[in-house]
Length: 254
Image 1 (tube, one colour):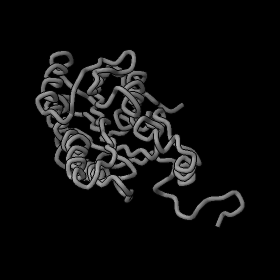
Image 2 (tube, helix red, strand yellow; image 1 turned 60 degrees about the vertical axis):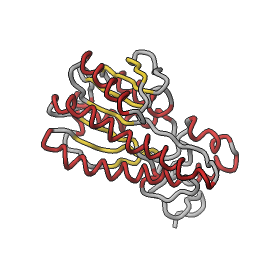
Image 3 (cartoon, helix red, strand yellow; image 1 turned 90 degrees about the vertical axis):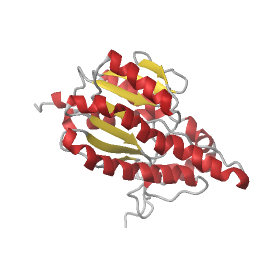
Image 4 (cartoon, helix red, strand yellow; image 1 turned 60 degrees about the horizontal axis):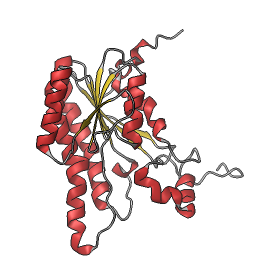
């Protein structure tokens, strides 16, 4: 039988941002089930049962600092940091598009970097920690109508590679988990619209939307010792969206 103990998170301390709902909540719950003690950060200060919930606005540097001071007082170290918090704002008109862009980047990119900097002393303590940045298929594909979100996720993929190089000497691995279309509050409009739902479903190889729980396996792998030789990578959990070429149908395989 294979030794699966490397996938265990027993005894490890994890921090998950955006832990109140969607992908962040699923990952936080999954890491806990794998054995970790999990601190869940969110604007609302809520998290799944069994997660240590803390209120934190990632656009507020002072709030981030206070959150990690509190984590340091309780745990003293961080073995895994998952940056799952993110926003996607609706169009607001030409006169406010720059404000929309800035607000999106402030949370989805700058806020992530601020979080990593605040966590760094606690990550460095372990000598073998992991950072997981939740990006998106938007990081390598052009999607219309939301340039700030696309730019932030592409920037976060680049930040992942940059910090993998910077932090390697500290034993900190830095990787990204890139979801495809996942049924969450952020995608509720397109999920509920029959035409939009079908268009996105057909764009995958597996023929379905993702669910938040689909992200848990990759997150556990990247947070655990099973990925001890993996850094600087972006793992796409997208049902085959980014790899798909010609449309796949039941009557045509070429």
